[in-house]
Amino acid sequence: MRRNRHPEPFWRASRNCFFVQIGRKQIKLHPDRDEAYRLYHKLMSQPPEQQALTPYNPVSSGQVVELLDAFLKWCRKNKAPRTYSSYKDLIQIFVDSIPRGLPIAELKPYHVTCTMDKYPHWGNNTRHDFIFPPKQAKGEKYYRTIYLTERARRIVTRLTVANPMGPLLVNSEGNAWTKDAVNCAFCRLEKKIGSKYHLGAFRKGYATEALKAGVDTVTVAHLLGHRDPSMISKVYGQVQQDPEHMAKSARKAKKIKKLANA
Image (tube, rainbow, N blue to C red; front, side, top):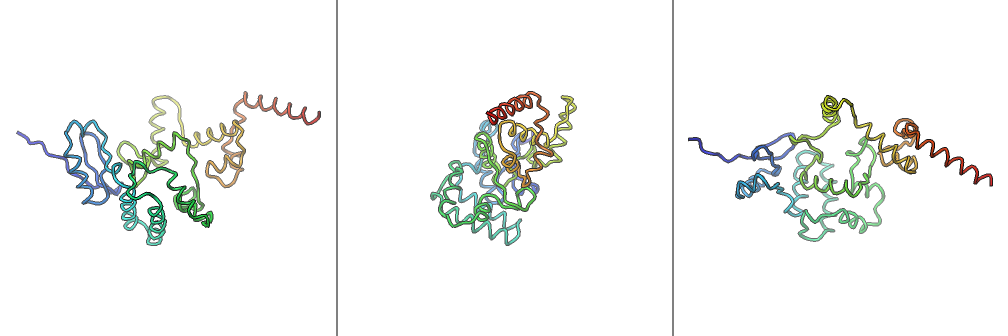
């Protein structure tokens, strides 16, 4: 008779983290081996039915400081010394500003903004670096601020807790969604629905709807991460493909002309 064996944690190099397989689900543990096994034993101490039905999130019950320490430990191994030093200095400023023992689940965006408010002498570069390093921005050159809707903020918050070391957007196998992976997914979807989509279509749609809603071209360009507004007019803004909007705009322009001549 075969004895049931408990699954053992295993290392996934692509995610720089330990995982454990429970049934068909791979559960993320921790990049540090000792901490990963501690979380693993904590998980295995739960009843089997709870392991299968309850999503286990080992980092959600921890403290923000512990999460940041783990991030810095990863940076020391995987980033350049100068990058690590920069992260360390900024994170220390943040840690000194938040409540002692702040749980990860209670971390909010205002904790970041409150920290920046304490340093009014910071220039724009320092403030942007505190939020989003340029190496991770579009083109890896300029700082970029991503504005989220309330729904998007909730999604990002959930993904940040689930994947504290990143990347946030992963597939069912835990691999990051790259542009090539997304394109492959769209190719598979095309076989089922008969239409081919691509990421650029979503950007064009976003830009077009923003312009139709009255958002100016310069603002739309910055929302998309472009420094040159001409890209919106040349590529992304497709307002001319909506006859109803164009007719409405023509009537509006005519009304404005009458008011000007009055």
